[in-house]
Image 1: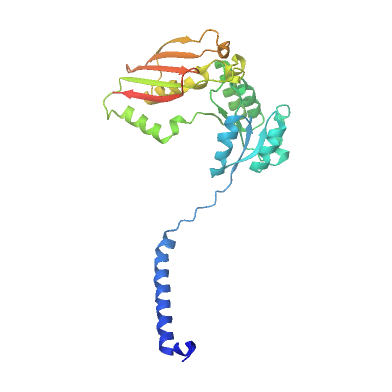
Image 2: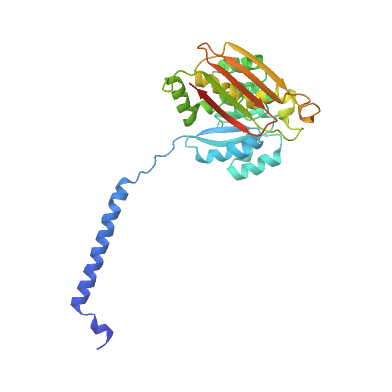
Length: 295
């Protein structure tokens, strides 16, 4: 008997039934999964951002993060290095007509694609480019610290009010989940009333020619750049503003990095509730970024 003849009608029906049963079982397994599948909504209109300054922070952190943004997209660059800007434009899909330099920056007012300007420049340039951006009719997010002097900060605030545009400083820490929980614990009294806070922020600065070590561009040394993390940690953990401050600075003699700015700062704060804080800031010690609350 041939192999074909062995496939009788009975065997055919039996094998077909088994196949249909298996298919049915597989389909029943899929139904709950498909029923639970959540299809995300379209993002809607995305705000267009112009990035001013294409240094390490922009290239390594800010621009890659836009890939995950639901409500924002990069549409323009402002840079003094056209080769760098053109290369990044190819990577992030920025139209070449939306690449500006520092001389024609003001013409960004005529670009309807740009809703918000992000200032990612050395501290000493924050005020000028924030004010010019606001005068161009754009909202501005400026990197920390806001500016080198209180007078420059006020100029930025006044420009925002006059233009009726938003101005925000890119200080993220108080919005991060772990810090928000630390704030809640510190202010809730769950661990008893807070008595003292220790906070340290710093890293070892390398190249003596970097802008962070230039007084005009940086406005100061480690305190202006990294020490504000320690200072602001004490403010948001307590929910208070200090009433007393004292500090000491020290720079290694003969170190070419610290001809213009300070290396170490140690400072103490007293808050209205009696909480004391001891903080440090440094461009000389190994990377530190932490705080401790003692109740």
